[in-house]
Length: 110
Length: 119
Image (cartoon, rainbow over all chains, first blue to last red):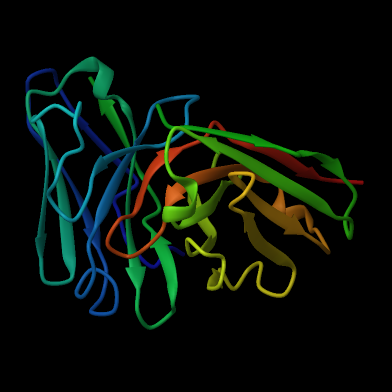
């Protein structure tokens, strides 16, 4: 059971906007930055969003992050087939004194 | 270009030991925290351990505390993970990642090294 809760799956058609949620608590998302990682099939994870809503250079602006209290969301607009991947949220937990990950969301582009 | 190259994985019997290494290049290694994250076959990401830039502070997941030790040699730009008393549930692909402070996350990842614990 992951400390951060994500839906196990999400889907959309090309061009659509999809949102992936990440639910935590006051000791992690509620008090620390959230990071999002994209893991394409058979590859290492890649940083997608840092500090809640910042994109590293090279990440398309179709990807955006937001926070509200103890929850965070990743939005992908203009969905493309190459976005099909697993997505993970992560944050430091001040109470557990560990990094915590969400269980991951498998995004399927129909 | 940031590069992280893990090595040291392999097949080990339950109760055995392994030492993983991560050779870093393309950035000032001694200025950054470093992290190990693992992924069991077909499962999600699990944070294992983090070490600060000087090596003076370390943190571990409960699942490995007392069995694994993270360390670094800044003169060799290398991160290590000493794994003792290995269990079947430690079987995973182990990734080395740059970063690990709560404000920075992990901005670069290696390709991973596979550890299989089996008799």
